[in-house]
Image (cartoon, rainbow, N blue to C red):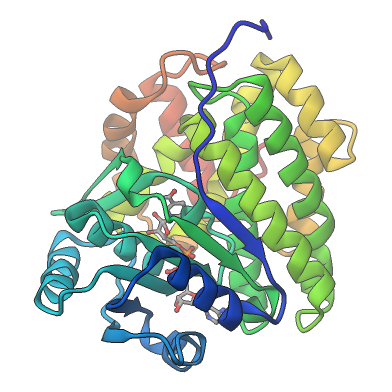
Length: 353
Ligand code: NAD
């Protein structure tokens, strides 16, 4: 890798506050000088959000959260924020909740304080996503980057093990895909490798002891670092594939990442020896593909897109939709045939080796 590069570091306050989210959220809202707070939390996180915002000047609690942020859902949230004169948003939840807060921020330029409860990492990126008529559109905008993030591992203890695994593998995908993404550079590569190290160490601990905090803290930290790397490096082939699958076929985000990643790694790793070596070290394995295989085995990751609702007959159209968005400098050559084979392997849950 040449040492000639341009790197942008996004400006955001980040707090790791195990057991201390409520105080941290209060301080961050005060720091913003907000006097009319909109809280966004799905019904399942409502009680938690209420506890975290107790004593704050909340004017609106919004709970219509839908994965991949349909445009109509975003529009209703924006209208509610405007109607109530909100001047800041506190969002408590996974990537879908953060995504809705970002949509409001995109429309109204409101500052966001994010309290993540999964390992999706959206809170650390300036990427927004909206879905309309089975097409997911993404873009970057500085307005959507949360001004502050409050991480509290105790809030992720309730995340069931299967969701923890797929969400953690979504974070692993941020690391892996960063190494060959369009803006990969030595800084985001270092972050990706560090994120992967923490995730590889933490995820099995979460599976073995879901109520324990040490694994949860490690995965939360790894997920944050992974997302910073991803925000800086941009979307590589893996993310392009998952965006099309998620938006067009309404597949669940994190499990789709978990299933597709080994197939993209198997395709790209032989064509990217430096990335392959860094990944192998971070996985603590002889090769990157073996490292991911043994992690996935250890945490019992999902294997097949067909189990997520993807149909075999949709493979040709999906490949056609992915082909135009394949990054030009992807390490391995990608044709419609390569994509069809990759999707077929992921559909049936074949071992990419
Ligand atoms: P999610 O937010 O939909 O959450 C998954 C499920 O977990 C939901 O049912 C939710 O209610 C539940 N849940 C969340 N936290 C919980 C907790 N602590 N305990 C128990 N249940 C809990 O899924 P996700 O994978 O976190 O996020 C996916 C969305 O985020 C997608 O729309 C994806 O596109 C987006 N995303 C965006 C970026 C970005 O940079 N813009 C990055 C990653 C993901």
